[in-house]
Image 1: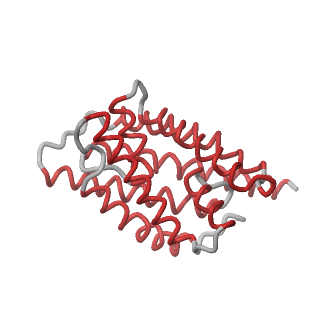
Image 2: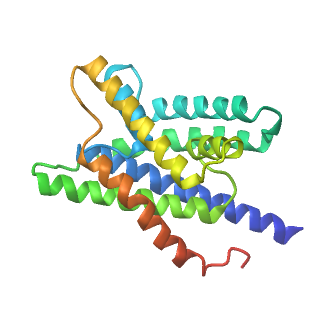
Length: 214
């Protein structure tokens, strides 16, 4: 039993490490000003016109995602998935901390912006791969996609792309309506959408050799 407890603790510690790295990845992406990743586009745009930080907006969005999962799955919803709530709180507050921590970085040139953006993309990919390796609870955004896939005959990959495109579209609409111009969605958003999954997949292959059982 003791070994089992240690095994579970290791998995949750790995999840927390992944979330921390992912949060800093989001912070770097915001700092680059080339557009955030699809999942962070809505919270970032909301933070531009509402009295909310990116982290707080992220937490609220994840709470909405959790509610959507409950409404979609109903009796099939597993209460253990409510663990997504503390995960969302941890991720949201860490995102705000990350934004504060990288505020001293300067991006005076377009090349510097891309460098910071790519660092952000890589960190998000590392965080995602660690989250998958931990295998204890997914972020609420992925939870919604999985919930939809349980009731519709659509593969996860296709649904994830559709979900990301929807979030980006919502971010664009909110940006134009409340700020009068496009913000939070740029070439960096496209790069993140294309690269995060590919990098995370390669890192996942490397991590597959690592056994958490000890």
